[in-house]
Amino acid sequence: MSTGTLVPLDAAATTYLLRHADDNLIASQRLCEWVARAPRIEDDVALLNIALDHLGHARELLTAAGNREGRGRSEDDLAYERNELEFSNAILFEIPNGDFGQTIARILTVAAWHSTLYRSWVGSDCVELAEFGPRGMREAAYHFEYARVWAERLALGTDESADRFRAGLASVLPHIGELFVDDAVTDRLGAEGWVTSPSTLKEACIELLTSCLGPLGLSVGPVATPVQTPGRLGHHTEAFSPMLAELQYLRRAFPGGSW
Amino acid sequence: MSYVEPLWEVFLRADRGLSHVHVGSLHAPDPEVAVLSARDLYTRRSEGVSLWVVRSENIHTSDPGKRAQYFESAAEKPYRHARHYAVPEGLNL
Image 1 (spheres, each protein chain N blue to C red):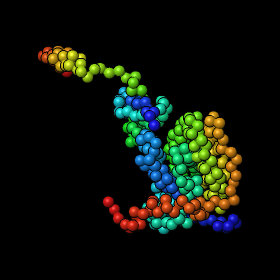
Image 2 (cartoon, each protein chain N blue to C red; image 1 turned 45 degrees about the vertical axis):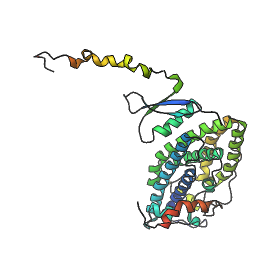
Image 3 (cartoon, chains in turn cyan, purple; image 1 turned 180 degrees about the horizontal axis):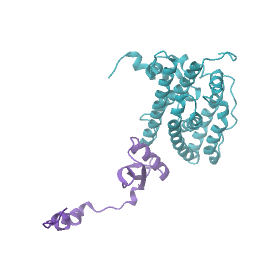
Image 4 (cartoon, rainbow over the protein chains, first blue to last red; image 1 turned 60 degrees about the vertical axis):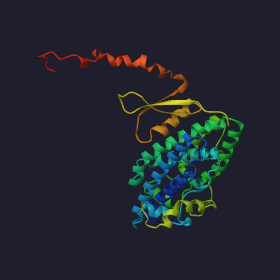
């Protein structure tokens, strides 16, 4: 899509919905890797609750994308029958979990982004986004609260927990720039009044993150706008394929299977 | 790791006008985490609208060994229940 060509509105909406569906699907899959591995059983349940919220969001957005696309693809077709290059999640969502400190750093960052993004959907002229907005905001707010409480305890806990949380942030934060990049898709939807340009959400998102990190003596640091959006274009990291293989294995091994 | 997080009892209020009911317990390092964990463990299927957590050590109980002397004599005093008394004839309830 070169600038200057006008993207058809339905195609732009499909791409946009799919991006955010993929972000949620991959966020969910990564959190699911914590099953039975969390440091406390209470957090095992909490991490999986967040994973389930992301999965619910992914399902709703995948279904909406399928409907917009108009080719009869269901949420399952989209989740299980696309290859790596067809996934448009941002890199932030697919990098490995790391330790608990890094996982909390990602939940915090993702929740700050989603809170900001979903708020901007409320009142959108795109009916799918307008309907999703309030519920998305509510759940992202809880994810933020959960991560904030742990961020506090890790950052102000022992030397080791503080080091690990700081290292976790250092692994996660360099990937947030991709979230704030405008392109032909968001320009088209923006011109229609359906979405707010990602670049204009940057400030609010970073402010929210800073509201947690600032009092802990930490900062988001400078966020450069990257020249490329690899994840959005389907160019994923090496860690992506094994994760996707695990996500899709059962459905691909037993097509049409049910239980 | 020898540190064991303290135990908390969780009380959940299902709806407006009802009282908080004990639903279980959990381990947490402090009150804020205890409430957070209680939310995740006990309220994910719309079970409630309000949570209390109390350190288990702050709950003092009756002695199970004294159950008989505490509670059983009440069972032999049916006159303490309104149902024990016959309703006088002519009283329209």
